[in-house]
Length: 225
Image (cartoon, rainbow, N blue to C red; front, side, top):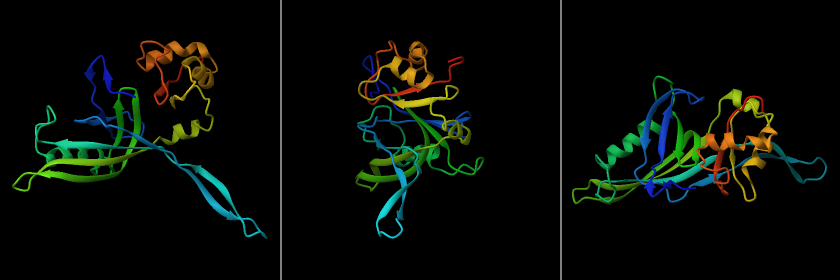
């Protein structure tokens, strides 16, 4: 995963939407410093049940919890970050407006899409903590680090469709693992390995071999697959 292409820095963008289908854009925030690392968290929900007459416990599967991603965002007005403007509080408020603040028109905070190179994640902000680490002699904050966690969200129609994980009439977001090839992944999703050129084009890949472990590939609905 990389935000660098042909020597040009590509910043992470956080785009706000007012609906869970991510069809109505309502704002955008550009991260000043790209994350050094992104942590994925996957949780499986089980309930402990006692086996009658034994005193031993077994686990009942309840479901897979939404995927989460966590990383740090820096805010700085010391001049270290090019193109930074306003004070640290203004920068944090701009970020909060997109991700955290209550939106009266939808009666909740925004839905957001994180985009950085091949990394695309759709969800909502689930936690935000800010640590101020540098101050002026007058006590004004000059630098702060926000630790954020976003939780995946999908509209109910998509969740129902995912009852059939190989359904070709929905968009799939798949993490590439060691040994994967685009034709092989197309065969798993569509049942047709020859659709790799369309998937490569949809993901902006110059060549279908330009995939590597950890990359997140979008498999869009393809008619007559």
